[in-house]
Length: 313
Ligand code: ADP
Ligand code: TMP
Ligand code: ASP
Image (cartoon, rainbow, N blue to C red; front, side, top):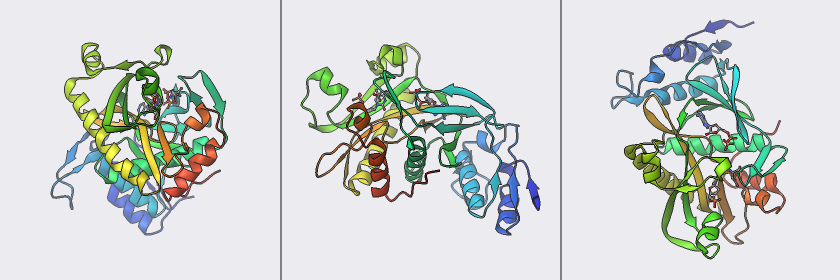
């Protein structure tokens, strides 16, 4: 039994905050209507933001603030719309939001190698939220709304581009096979590459001409994805370096919500390569790809080094 029920999430940000701050049990029900705030890119009439604030950011921050005081946002999986190799996506009762579930499934080589690794979903979900928060605090717009529990996150529903954006600081993996490059070679400049997201074709390398000609994305959208990827590289190279790790390479996916390009999917040790900066020991999914063992232990070690407190069950 609750003392207070509030509906109409975004428009009721202040009442929700007052109620939860006053220690009333606050249950926030999700509306089914399209709410104005999540459709607004720059909100210019909200008190306290003379320069304006992005609608989705305002929603996210208001929710985080109310949750700090104990507000309980009712969020339910309605229908599974995608079961990927490592995550499942569910609709919610808000048409603009999805629940992203990180499962314990591990996959490599475009699904040719698979296993279940206990605890992977939990560490990756919380790892991703930590990194997305860090990126968001540093000006990168992303889809994460909030962490729901150990293995679930609430995200903005995106219309995903069917492409993968890869940045490499050192050569390893597919580029060495492709170009015969020495493994671990430090590149003179971070290298950006596009891949087509298509497991059956083995995610082939493509260039922007393919993307534009086939209509997968437009030129200006590609410019934005490239510059955001470089910005992510600068931010995360430093973040990992400060904790004794080399960010060797990584993959990002982007999508569109209300006409705006947001970083989607995930940033976890599943989609990047991280090496210890002294021993060059691999701390990422290459441990699974190459049967090096201690996969989840390594993910936890990386999380611990970055100061994350990962909760398991
Ligand atoms: P894969 O497709 O590589 O097997 P996953 O198991 O990670 O990948 O599944 C997650 C799927 O959800 C991917 O296809 C990804 O592109 C998609 N996705 C990620 N974030 C969003 C989002 N915010 N909205 C819609 N789809 C998303
Ligand atoms: P690659 O060396 O296999 O091309 O991978 C480059 C980086 O991108 C590496 O960190 C792994 C990541 N990646 C994925 O996470 N998923 C993919 O489907 C691909 C092709 C790469
Ligand atoms: N991400 C792809 C997969 O899960 C490729 C890889 O990581 O090796 O199969």
